[in-house]
Figure 1 (tube, helix red, strand yellow):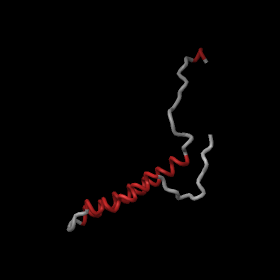
Figure 2 (cartoon, rainbow, N blue to C red):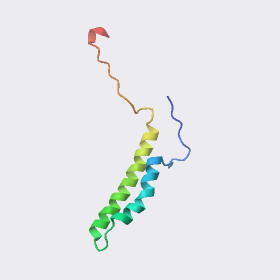
Figure 3 (cartoon, rainbow, N blue to C red):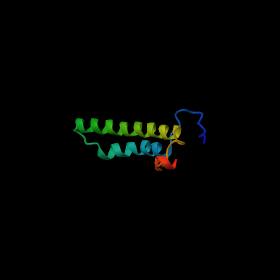
Figure 4 (cartoon, rainbow, N blue to C red):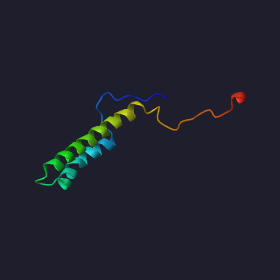
Length: 80
């Protein structure tokens, strides 16, 4: 089974787009004025979340034919 590749290497999937869209409201909700360490952690976390969503989406797009239920041959040696 062959999965057609998108012509644009940086095409985003729905999950990555949702995470990137809600990143700004999350920043506005959880940012605390006067707490630079917390704000730096929050910024790093949101950036990491967005980057990981993009990388996971790219991985799933490239390896779509390989994902699924694993099947193993559980027959005895003499039954093969």
